[in-house]
Image (cartoon, rainbow, N blue to C red; front, side, top):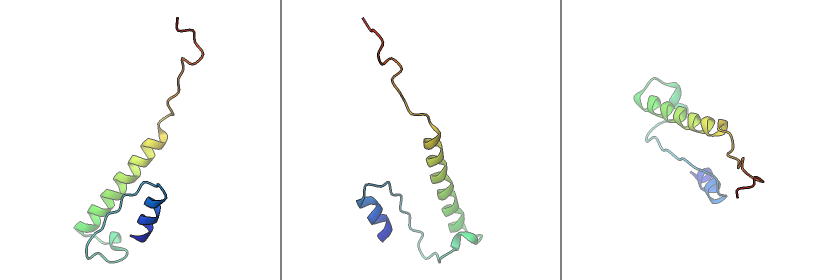
Length: 67
């Protein structure tokens, strides 16, 4: 949680999720909580990769005579 607070304070995008009573490495086990966490991770990554693959929007009309 301290790292999330530092990233947020620096202006970074933070998505902090807490999975109660889950030990370190719990996503390697076959449990409902692990499945939920892995799904959250996959969705987060997919959102970041799709946003990164979108081309930047540019003004293609710059410099054209619009009169």
